[in-house]
Amino acid sequence: MAEARFAALVYNPVKVDVEALKAAIADEEAATGWAETLWLETTQEDPGPGQAREAIGRGAAVVIAAGGDGTVRAVAQELRGTGIPLALLPSGTGNLLARNLDLTLGDPVNAISTAFTGDDRPIDVGVIDIRSEKGSVSRFAYLVMAGFGLDAKMLASTDDDLKAKAGWLAYVKAIVQVLRDRNELRFRYRLDDTPARSVRAHTIMIGNCGSLPANILLLPEAAIDDGEFDIVVLRPEGFLGWVQITLKVFWENGVLRRTSAGRRFLSKGEREIRALNYLKGRELVMRLSRPEDIELDGDGFGKATAIRTWVDPRSLVVKVPAES
Image (cartoon, rainbow, N blue to C red; front, side, top):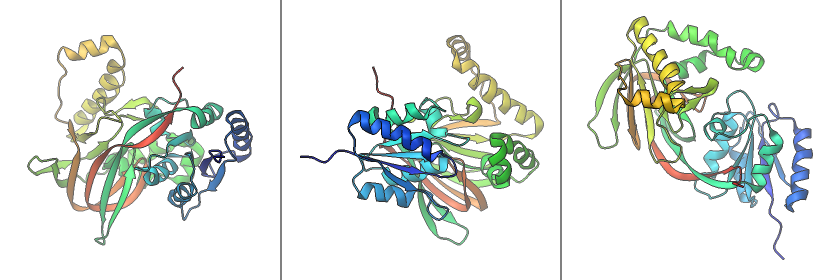
């Protein structure tokens, strides 16, 4: 007789109500006939990769990530290429992947049901080699975005205690600090097989998905399973440049693109602006003129002097609600 399937739950104890989850998961186990769930707690020393590897080694049929974006990214990094589905139990302030998959937030019972009975959806994963200031190279995976400039410096300047208390409002103070920073990014890049280019910019973001918290649609053409990155380069020149970027991101992307009438209006002649440029590709190689802060899925990863990043198409399976 075959053994019953079981799930593994990798959870951040700071961000989830363990007792409430145990009751909801026990109910789902009883309803589906699955065996007892394997509970694996993250630590500061190991925020998810080790727990995910244990779940894989012990034969879990699905791995549930319960925590913030960092927990989801760490678990996904280990599940990439295994065929074992990742299920999301959104917690924390960001929930970037869940938002981009249009999953319901704030409903743990529904999320747990999806983990046990949902459909499998393959998605792309970004893989990145980061060269540090000391010359060592480390490889990571990410699901939403990698970035230099505004977002990475903002994360480096954010007060973690304030973030814990005030959520995304904590970033306001950091944004003000970063916008005062006049230092440009200077880098040389090659996208796919195109010739290398040298660029000065304020920010570059490499996206597997398009949406950020607060319903900000930064990369309107990004799709999580199209085998390509969507890249945005911000090059504002003074106050007017920031006004152009704000109108583009918040008005055109955030409002007009979300309605059929707005999309028809944009199709009649969408105007490109010098302050913001979009690119598409499968592999990006960058060398920076000096070490710069880098972020992956909303977490800082120190300073980098160079990166190579590429798309691993449809290499991660994610649980989504079953179609009726």
